[in-house]
Length: 355
Ligand SMILES: *[C@@H]1O[C@H](CO)[C@@H](O)[C@H](O)[C@H]1NC(C)=O
Ligand SMILES: *[C@@H]1O[C@H](CO)[C@@H](O)[C@H](O)[C@H]1NC(C)=O
Ligand SMILES: CC(=O)N[C@H]1CO[C@H](CO)[C@@H](O)[C@@H]1O
Image (cartoon, rainbow, N blue to C red; front, top):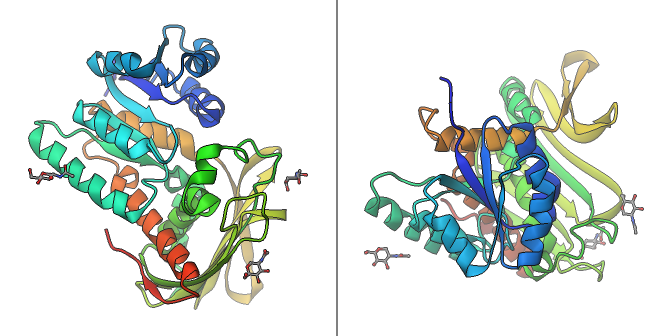
């Protein structure tokens, strides 16, 4: 169906991710969306992001402070907002917008803790029962929209009984990384493991097609330039009976990001890589007799995710995209919180909270 006037949206937040991801990705699909405003607490930071956005969206307005936020709330041409602010205040902001009847695409993590998630989900249910048309609360984690995961998930179904899963993350969060100094990430309980880890757990849950039921982990704080903990080794148990390991080192000299699912009839592997200057994933399937084939999938998860949200809020899709639902983001946080708790309790087996 043709969409004569694309939905109006606003971005709340004007940080690095807004400038380097949201604005360029939105510019690529500017026929599907009308970016009407960018808001930040301070005028200066809002102006910085608006300057970047004006090249692609000449009509974008600069809003700041409580007054600017109220203007966005009052503007009925703004159907949805992207909430891209500090992890500690995102849920409060999202709920405020949902109460005002706006659809919300909130950046991950879904919340900073399970406690916050539980209260948030009750508040959301309360809003939805009061209002005639339910505003959508989506969490942006983008991994569920990466073509590599979408395609490899299908192949996991063909490798027979699952015997083992490995998830190895050696990050490169050192002082050259633009997020290294981000104060809210440093103050988040769980540090970079929670903030970055939700992506990897999202990928894991998507690939194996079932939930993580319990975990046992060891955590430590080795690199004192990073918030604690900066490394974690966890066993996990899946609903389907299979077990696996999750290793995450926040800052290493040898970046590696890899998922591997070993089945009775074959193995599938997804590894972050670069081909012809493009970043993405190398997806490899190992079959019988030492055969293997590899396909490269460039990144496009952020774009695919934004498109899905705009389809949902403009009412052109039949049902809400399940990969965007708040509960999916909540489940990723629940797995990491269980791992961090286990680490703090010397490896005690911790069941993962079900949502
Ligand atoms: C949800 O609504 C119930 C019943 O009106 C109320 O008791 C409860 O405090 C509300 N919870 C939240 C988190 O808003
Ligand atoms: C940070 O990590 C990247 C990727 O491994 C590396 O190229 C760079 O030299 C590192 N910078 C510092 C300051 O260690
Ligand atoms: C790579 C690294 O720093 N590993 C450490 C992770 O934590 C365990 C437990 O404290 C240490 O033994 C490792 O050296």
